[in-house]
Length: 179
Figure (cartoon, rainbow, N blue to C red):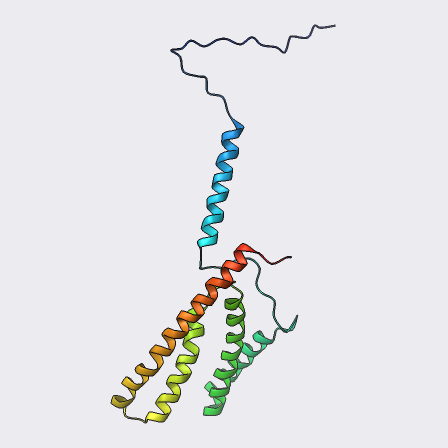
């Protein structure tokens, strides 16, 4: 039977002039990991762009209504390309825009992804089309009126929608939805 060596080692006292021996410390590693995790969480909380969490569910359940609207609008635009007709084009653009508007508004208002510029531009462009229709065909007359009406509407809506997104994003980051 072999004798077991003693597991005990003697400790050497170090002299005051020598540097301490480098010993791997798990505490330092744990502290570094906690600090890295904390800074990552802080950066994530401050981040405004990109996606955060899971995509918000559709209000229509499992039925892809928005995707169907976008597809139908694109089909109408392709039909307009071959057959013509102003009504086909208007219907195609309107139906496609409604599908896009539903998806972007849902993502924006829940704090998932910012679509501030697009959501502010849609009413401003619609108002611009209305102004151009009312003012007339003279280009010199309609450009200043168009800018005087559409730009302030866009700027105000952009400000409101950006503020709303920041509130929704903060709520999403602070309290992620239960899975």
